[in-house]
Length: 114
Length: 110
Image 1: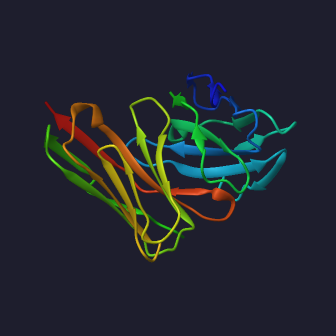
Image 2: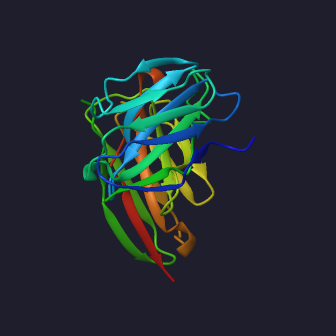
């Protein structure tokens, strides 16, 4: 068990560019969650998947944000036309459906929009 | 909208002192978790409490879930410099989507 893996760890991009982040969950976990954390705040829920189905996406911050989990394993989070306000840490977590124990976060991707 | 308020936001204490961090909400949660986060890393789960009134101990850390499952506390006995970090509480509901508090930044000075 290698834990939840996120890539890249850091991303610097120019305003207006698109960025994509990847999350590889713990292999036996069927739920995958995305959160955003800005400096000095607690993480904020964005979206989650059970297997390949996206069960909640109303909390994505705008239509520039989208997420996929095409085969029910890894997931990607894409931000189109990045803005400076998108600068934050993007965190991925995974768990088993119905199990609050074992909820595990990755180390995050730190995005800086310049 | 469910909100979790943590207090205090910042705490600076000397090694050996005791401290308590509070996590309060007007909403009921099915469970509540406490995390510790180091700079540049993701949160690491410390404990999950599920039953109202539940108390869990993890070495020098004692966690309590309120009877009504709306609030929680974290008590650290004889704090050590290694306890320094950001402590986050998070309430879980349907789908185990977590609502986080704003965090308590703890610094323990040697």
